[in-house]
Amino acid sequence: MNPRRGQHTPHTINGDPADLAGFPRLVGEFAEWMGVHGYSPRTIDNRRAMLSFLVDWLAERGVTRPVEVTRPMLESYQRACFHYRKRDGHPLSFRSQSQRLLAVRAFFKWATRAHHLLHNPASEIDLPKVEQRLPRPALSQAEAELVLSMPELTDPAGLRDRAMLEVLYATGIRRSELAHLAVFDVDDDRQTLLVRQGKGRRDRMVPIGERALLWTRRYLAQARPKLVAEPDDGTLFVSADGVGFSPDRLTQIARGYVLASGVPKQGACHLFRHTMATLMLEGGADIRYIQAMLGHAELSTTQIYTQVSIRALQAVHAATHPGASNTRHRSPSTDPDVDDDTGAGTPDGGAMTDHQHVDPVADVEVLFSVLEQEIDQENRADPGSPDTTLPSERSS
Image (cartoon, rainbow, N blue to C red; front, side, top):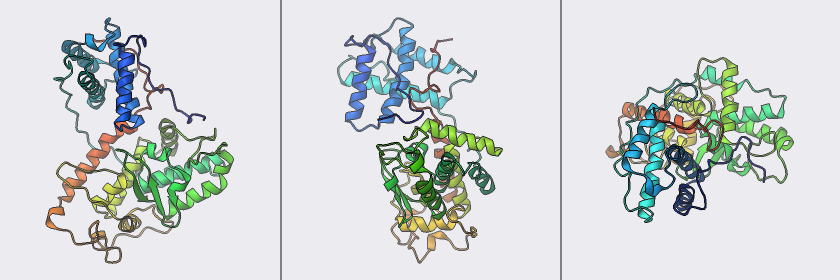
């Protein structure tokens, strides 16, 4: 089977693969252990990528086996991550540093439990405090429409791109979720989209909206037959090579249209996710419905997540998302929480009890904090891509 366009081979772990106690062999066993225990392939690849930075750094200092690693070495590596500068001269964010160290802690914890090590040298490594950043600005409704109008509709690829942007705008799904959509995940009759094995390996169903559905139908009828390669594996959006996209390639496409539009905002696929949440909030949607759309299991450790019925969610989506239909969007005149027709007062259609009530202002702040935290992970290049390959790290 042909690889997805833009997809690259995951990071390799440098060292002697014949050495039973070396990093290549043990990292491979660690990856196998994660697979057996249900970790997603993307998580496994990302952890390999993060570990490869440590392995390269240690190899420059003559250390090729996990058993040779000491706590002072890892503390020195943590300082090296802090002082490291990327090709553009910028330092690693504290979130990126934390991601690298999380993989290191997970690996040495596994190696100790698997009796490859007598003690865990990473057990007392403290992760850096992640900075709290203000949310990046989302697109306004007018700006979103401008970006959506950029693709050239006379070209099959342009029609495909318009359909992809419309789906991102309407549903707020992640780029990886868009890449893995299948043709049969779109339900015309119910006007829903089934996201299979999204973040956290959870399935969820979201409203797609009449407008995005119309563009998807047009793409399926006019563009996809000209693009798809045989044998057809059923992937919804396919590249000029006839196969599915990698998340990196989707980022390149979306960012290109954002830049071409001239809007004073930066971003790509995640920008549409942020915009969907912002516009629905401004339209009067309850925070719990947006939470369900985004696929967040919880917004905080103190808030219990309750399932939202797809019928209620569709009603809120249609009432609050300006791109949900082809008709002029109406201003909210009623509270979506008391829609007698849909039973949308609470996820189960009943009245909201005291223990379900939360501070809406605080909840919105948590929502956008979570969205902001997603950006680094969402826009991180796939493991093995050129964007991920950095010069060998050296301590300053």
